[in-house]
Amino acid sequence: MTGASNQLISVSPDELKFQFELEKQSYCDLKVSNTTENNVAFKVKTTSPKKYFVRPNTGVIQPWDSCFIRVTLQAQREFPSDMQCKDKFLLQSTIVASYSDDLPADTFSKDNGRTVEECKLKVVYVTPHSTTGNSEDGSKQGSDANSNQMVQRTREERDAAVRQTQQLQQELDMLKRRRNRKNDLGFSLKFALLVGVIGFMVGILFKLLSSPTTAE
Image (cartoon, one colour):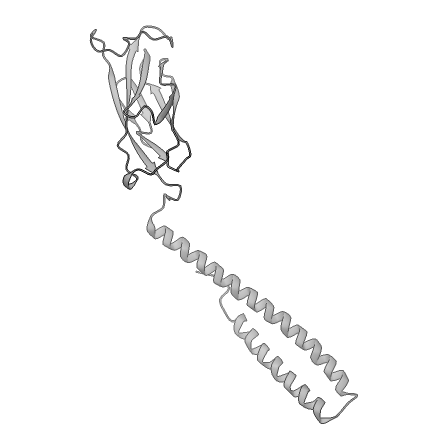
């Protein structure tokens, strides 16, 4: 995670990234660190104050300390054009004499010769379906998923063939026992037909067993 910095503070990350969904709030946390031996006051400004809720929007950070600022994007009723956001944030910072949240109104005014540093942050919208991987990784994951589905389907077909073959074997054994008691022509034809069906199912089973069960 990258950050931005000046002589008084460092800010991480260096942009405000919001997961954009209609009618839902989204937030982004900023870590602001004081990189000096002085008390540093900060103030957050934005070009679209009605869209964002910032807490805290002002404060004082003690020497070598840090604080978190949560910026909340209010629920929106429509998508921005091309998901591009032109909103900007400005983080002002200046050295103050004491650690107090009760800051004078002119704390960040440059008219009295006070040094006020500024850090600009842009806003980025992302959709919930955005992924951090590249397209090649996505294609590979999709290919792996398809391969796993094919392997699973082959295993299910093989198991079904095994169960059916076992059932036919049981019927064959029963017919053999009956054949010992009967020897008429009709029974012999039925017996021969059943033997042929079993041979066919065994052939299918051998074919399924020879199929790959793992995906490369």
